[in-house]
Amino acid sequence: MPERILLRAHFTDLLSKAQKAVAEYDRLAQSTADSKHRQVLSTLAKDQQRQVELSERLLEIVDA
Image (cartoon, rainbow, N blue to C red; front, side, top):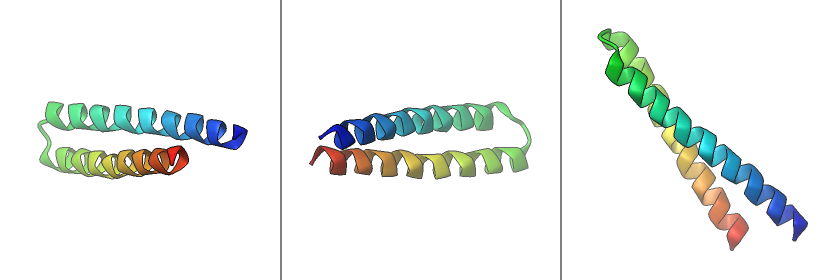
């Protein structure tokens, strides 16, 4: 039981950080005029979105 609490806290923290990173990369991508930079930042946002999805899935597993 205590392990689940620790895992839940850890995965919740990961989820929060990943969500913030997605938002920041999206914001930066929209604010740049350079198409190469926009593409790189959009790719980073997509990668972080996958991290969000993974963290959500891990939380589902811990809560099951």
